[in-house]
Length: 164
Image (cartoon, rainbow, N blue to C red; front, side, top):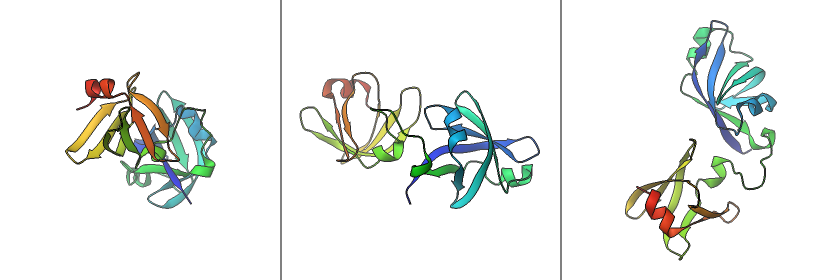
């Protein structure tokens, strides 16, 4: 079974075990369509979810009070890939991008994606022989993504402008 991280628990909300989570899906409301979630390898049935911006408030079966909810603070919320909503063309789950090799449009190997930090403009973190490199996925930087071949091609000029 393949899991994808769909949210992170921020804090308990109220006294009945509800959790406030930061959602990593395109829309927080999509979380409500996932029937079961996993936290630290344990499966939870999703009882209720309501979206508010990029956050959601969720109720999980088995988390009945604030004390139980507090134990989940800071943990990742995962879902089975098969339970996640399909993505439109040109959109990818972060898990599909991690491990991709990044090449410039002139063929230079720039490194391998170790993580993607979700933001208004996602931040890609690469491991390269010269150390860690970060770059924003700003307009015109990424030319092609092929998650099946684990390859990303970037515009070398734009990459130099936005990488650190």
